[in-house]
Image (cartoon, rainbow, N blue to C red; front, side, top):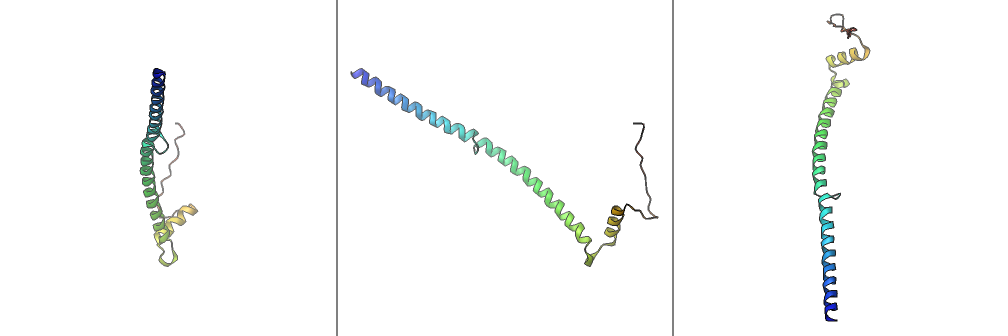
Length: 108
């Protein structure tokens, strides 16, 4: 009887320690590889860097566009900008301009 009780208490303790180790292992694996784990944090940091660079590029592009638009406003119209845009949109050239026409090489 005594040996059976000791065996029972030993197996109960072993089962509890095994379950605790399993739970600790489960949470450790999720902390490392889970959705918000260490690996995910590195990927999020890399994505933040990429998106920050793209944001800076888009801000620069927007400021350049705003600069070009400001040159076309009626209160401070830049004649060179107006001339450039009109030629581009109408596909015209000034008679005094030097025009170079490049034909694609048909032999290639």
